[in-house]
Image (cartoon, rainbow, N blue to C red):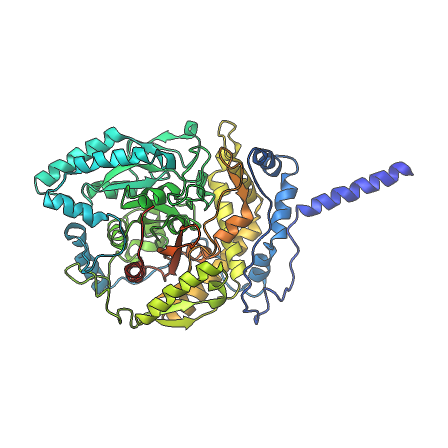
Length: 610
């Protein structure tokens, strides 16, 4: 009898554990499925946080032990992932699932004519009537120095190499070759000597995130050096920059696989925030942001799947534009429905010029096939510059008349009081310049945010599947946990997230942007002060999913819905003097509108270098 009782108890315990492997059963939940539930429902998630040597232990238990399926499923269930399935299976069951956030437009002959006209700015330049308050050297500054003959690219690059060495302590570079920089500079010298520069980028130092192929540089994706691959050909962004005469000075450190928006990478022990090395620089395009913020380059290319351009731009005090999904070909990342490429730049003119250079559709690319090359508008700067390339009336107090800015106040206010006040001041400034504020609501923000998380986790797990199981590929503890979490996501959850994406595209794009004729939706970029790493993170990293989720509070819509987002520096925290960022979210293919708004804010903000 005693043996039978033990057997029953054992079976009961086994069934309890197996129950943890199941998704939460769904039903009608008024919090998410009631059609009248339009209140703001975004909330923080709960997850353990750890750093230092214990992270390796936790990563093994959570990602590779016999207990990992139970732990990961329990974590997903605890944080309400089932709400996505509830909405998808009830209120939105009539909607199709969207695998990619595709936006197609009819490109008019007038738009093509305007874009062709604006291409000339890549050789003639863009100019301002008034100096911006940037304290940075931008692309046009390099161009004017070379044009005047005051210095040659080789002379400037020698100063750059010295400057880069002085900033070694920030751990910016994953691949840096002074001999190659000097070779490119000599070629640029000759073109300038002959009076035949290829563009305003000729001789300008630029950098690329360590996920873009550039000839002569090792590609590591933020992982340990043993896993790096030497590249002999340029990817598309590197080719476009090189064809314009830009000097590719190196690849910048990124967080491993792009899994964290905080910015630290174990394999390269950095980068560090140039304003205060004891704080995160933002990620995953961390090295690109630090290279620009430090004044080494006026522009670096980043990639953004969950704020990886906008968050480092905010935390490191530069501009960052993540373009419409499919505008810029990003290389071998077509299996992701979240990734967008874009510039991190010292000034808004650098953003504008980089947009013109990188934003042209690439014939035969994955995106051209997916969207249709004729449905991708060419990059242009309508209402940003006149036909002579002069920025339009920056100090005209009616400069933003006719601009309609959407603001979801409950969401906007979900931030640290100091961040809220700084961003509110920027809103009031634009209002003073003639912009009209439009109150909006976006129901089901929690489910939209979770849908972004579920989708990018599963895509990352799929893309790095071989690395996860390769015993020779040594992953960081946080990367292992993130991959395992993505592998725990079910097919039903992924499909449900795709249906929420469809809802979001209809709500935000059709009802808000087009229905209310909004030019942008505004918010803070980062809703809290620039975070500090946990104790013991050096050499191990940290895993803090709850903090990552808070950091990304204002980020997911741009990636989930494939929309452009721009972060602009607007000030500094009172105590730490670390930067504060302001975000514009635009409708598909409206980068020119965001650039116009960014220029206006830039003019009103006095910036300082670290």
